Length: 349
Ligand code: AMP
Image 1 (tube, rainbow, N blue to C red):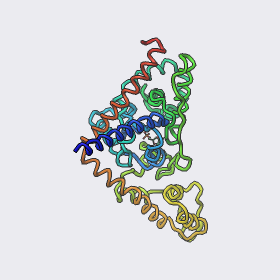
Image 2: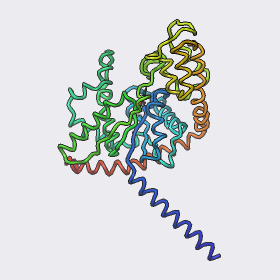
Image 3: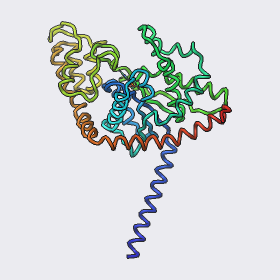
Image 4: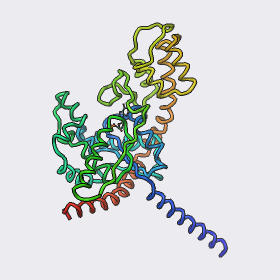
């Protein structure tokens, strides 16, 4: 029927227009970039500090989230471990709710031009400047044998961000200095070769900027103090029960400031529920055992649906690989264009 085909043509034209509008809107959106290293399981510090922001902001920004496998090479030097961990982080991204139809997930090493840009930036960066980076100083203080990759990590990160002309980078507080280094590097390049790179801003959530681990230090994969993001109920219980407390009895008043257990409550409980906990601490009446049980329930409520989704996703590894490949191709065309500009401006072309 001619009428029908006209209608469906009209529909498809509208659809084309919609797609065009969607593309233009994507172009107009500010660019968000961030990534997680495929080294061990992510924890609730990664989630609350950074990853949840990726999900919350994915529609507002042109969002590009990568699996930082080049960065992981500084510590993971095993083929199977790195490729499995890379897929794992991609699955983690999907499980927390990143939508590859609306944003881009890719593997850092699918954009090898970041290493070319790192070299260009290396040549503008002095050794004393990079020696002031916290991560390097920490490693040095621990007398670790430091590879050049660890020393140069902030410059690779600057390249990751600047090659996209990213406007915002959601991260935890430990990464703030690295964003400052990226800004300094962009400014230096722009000064020497002319305006080229946008200056990125960190997005750091005040209340979750440094999530404490079960020992009260920053929750970190390297401190053995984490509550894994996709933990089983048993693992959550074990981790929370291991949080150190003093020996005050339930009826005795307890201080909330600096108390790891209480700080963790504030990240999972709001409003009147939190007030009740606070009251039980300040005026007594809430014992540490009961407090831990409440925290276990709240963490379990957050983690269970994420873990179940993660289990579903892990059944279709091919789909995860396809998502990474597609994302890599999409990003490569953008970064290729930017590198052409850099080659032109520096005289490499
Ligand atoms: P990484 O696993 O080191 O690649 O970290 C991934 C993201 O999680 C980065 O943005 C970190 O700043 C953030 N992050 C790591 N640990 C914590 C923590 N304990 N509290 C808040 N954010 C964190």
